[in-house]
Image 1: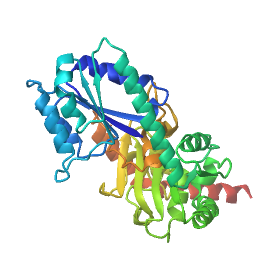
Image 2: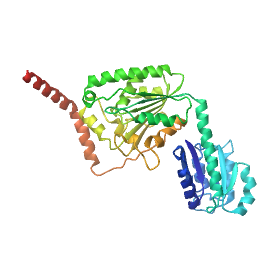
Image 3: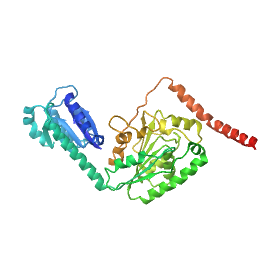
Image 4: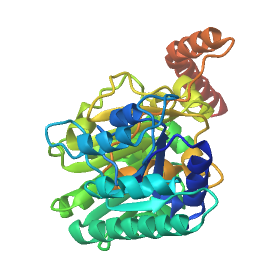
Length: 392
């Protein structure tokens, strides 16, 4: 993922650059952030960016008077090793004022690589900008391909054949020349077998043994684990006893693990664990209130703190939202997973939850039904036993 920061108080030029980036063939591999002042740029530049696009005339604070002094001082701060700012790999200066361009071009070039005439009604600088961004992105992809051998292990859920696994692997291969993908499949696992604890656990042990074998055979490579629904139960079992930090990233989504369950073994085995949650995952509500041994961590998150090694993220959607289009441009995994899986970028916090009328009643009802679950299951077993004995 190529991270781009634009510092410009011109709304028209900001919109033009954003639309230009959106039109690129590789736009899904770009992350664009903009701000309108030197001070707001300093706040953002404590994080890492690949490209800084900087207007020569910017205000120190939002809506104050733009001056070239502020952009020059910003560049000086970025390049000062004693200050906390991270210098982008490339800096491009922009201005619509030709006289200003001639006056400050020399000062800009002390720190910036390129200075362009950024007039909104001109197309030359836009084309130059596109060339620079395309080149940076290509270089980033080549470096990733050369430096690391990656292993992607993906595990699908029940009642599906996991078509998403191939698509995710295909996207990752653009970044890693020697990526080896293991699409762990186990056929169509029916809901009845999934609901019976001993049948479910038998399947978990069978598949997790295969996963453990894959991990052991690739211990010298960077391993990324992605699991959906029932697959998260398999991952949890497979990582018991795994060496500390032996996995680069574990991505769990739509998990029916109980939200209160201890997952320290998963977090210990991975450098980063992300639990993706869908706030309208009603399948997990049914799992929590009806099926013994299951919960809805893929809806309400695990009961633990976000940290440098773990994060709950909350999205609007149901059980399969992770394999659908997120917006007009991106699928969910292109937008939220590829940056983590391809460039080791830290996952961004995301929480789309909102309070709604009647939320207290719904929450109390789910908790009450969860408490009654053992009674319901015991009654169901007794009823089935009665039917069997009376039919003999």
